[in-house]
Image (cartoon, rainbow, N blue to C red):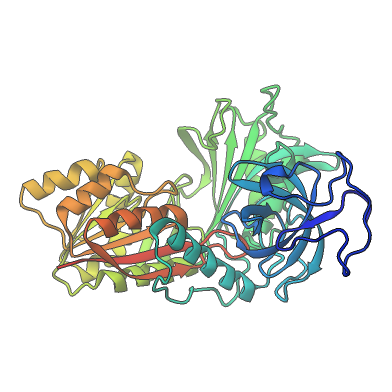
Length: 490
């Protein structure tokens, strides 16, 4: 291969040794070895053994004890790579050649894999994905919680890890051959057509494609961000796995929809099983998808869906888990961790629309949910009423403020459940938990790093970590959901 020679990370060579070919004296712009990782420069070639996957799906190895991140590389592989960036704490490099191939490497079935940015590890067999995600969790607890041998249950995967997403939220744009519905490529504003996406449910893919064709046929203009012209920005399709109802929402820059009646008629004719057509108006030039106002153009104002024996009414903007099959497994593990006998008081912090609290309610004495977003609290109350969960109450506010107030009034929860955003728990909430001293603390997280960091604070505050349970909520991506059970030491 032409270009700069490769430098191996784990060996040093003497130019005149018996086993080395004779080499010319290096010139300043053509270096044959580096004594330290700090001496590397962009364009240098290195050889790296990949140890694990990073949280973004990149291969992670080491060069002179410094972490190297290489997109597309897999654990166990030996990679020839070209350095693209050298920072104080890491090196970024581009894969150039695979010297030793992982037995789990495969051809990604999606034609736009590695372009659209939606999936990161389709080139890794599902068996390999499960092992890699367990390693991501172990690494997080080792690095951030100081736990080298964390007690971890086997990851809960899927029998069929494709077609699991019940919702697509795709940007619209114009390409050389017409209208595109897709995602923006990583770190760019280039729209990538993801027609037939293999992780979306086939009904979702079909509805997106048919709706796109109807919009194009009627020449309804697509919104152009740069010029602030056009109308339809985003198409959102949700399919009820249990109800088999189908909801389409167009996010538009204006409430003036040309050819509205014709659009409704053609969508109903084109898309079998269509239940609802809505329009959400977002006139602002913003990265937020939805605006504040939604209008039902035709059909029902919501669709129905269920998780186990729980039934939910989903309006166009309502939050609902994207992988219902794995959500049931996750919630059942939460119930097992909570150890409920029917008498316990439970606090469901960061409760969202109340799904976890409602799942636990039949097994608890009382459930109190806390959520800072008013609309989510109203949805939680409606879901409780719909499902007859009369022992649940949902409060608008912040857990770090409400918990101490409740404790002062005599309320003492036996179990606290927390399912925060990726950024983890608010430090004030952790302090409130340590002051409240529930017997059990169950933490659900979509980010192993922040989970492990928060776990360390709880360990220092008098809790023990009983076990960690990874759940594969999003196959073909590097994301891994986890829940942990922490028990108060006597």
